[in-house]
Image 1: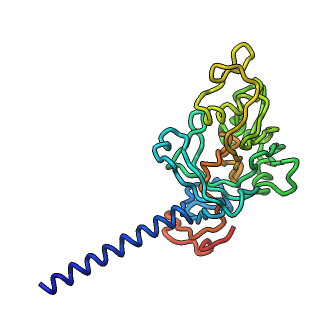
Image 2: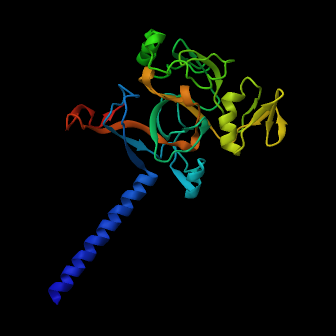
Image 3: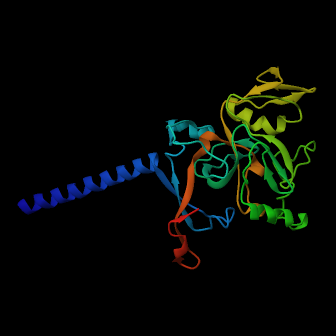
Amino acid sequence: MIKQKKIIKSILGYTIAFLAITVAASLLRFWVFDIFLIPSKSMEPTLIPGDRILVLKPNIGARIYNDFSSIRTGKPDVRRTKGLRHIQHNDIIVFNYPGYDDRIFFNFNNVYAKRCIAVPGDTLYVEDGYFRIPEVNVELGYLPGQNQLLNTPDELMPEGMLYDSIRSQNSVFNWTVKNLGPLYIPKKYSTIQLTSYNLPIYSPAIEYETGLKPYIVEGNIIHDGKCINRYTFLTNYYFACGDNIVSSFDSRYWGFIPEEFIMGVTNVVLLNFDKNKRGFKFSRIFKVM
């Protein structure tokens, strides 16, 4: 009987310890960090397939879901803890993919890592493949990738990845991924003039924020049954691209990333395991970007 009690106590002790460790690990991943696998080549050479990256949350603040059921609507109800700093140009951000049938839609299980090119309030230009923001005096993005884009003949671009740029279906723009802009990146509480020219760019953000899609009738913009010519944004947005810019599917194609979609910033590769070669790349262990 005594031996049986000892066994039961041991089992209970191990169970409690296991549960405590599980809860502690979950809290750490919720508030402090998360780990994600890089599956594609879109961020090469900075990040390569098989990399496990460490995403730190305190720097911009961890997301807290006020209502998890809101995830199903495509518009998460979240707030963010106080961060140490704001997202900056050239940060590598990890976020939920925001594209869905020409709408901004939250995809909980679809996570991307890209380099932040433009922050709220910026006006972005892409000129011959190079990123430019007039008021920002730093090199934007991964320059060798932009050099490669410039020197890649249009006919050698991956199929559909030259003219299928953001809102390129509107013939007024005639934008490509090599040349587009000026593109204003919406900032919370900023107000823009709406026209039939720029409505295709900002319509997804307006529909995301209000649940109602604006449309044009006889030259007038109609939203929620009213004729409007201005709109004030309710959240911040970002523009991000892959370093392997010739073959990266990013904001040049699907547009803006709402701030609440962003999980955090990464600058550390924990390790890389190559499934094809069945081994670790030791040069990637704790590699700082």
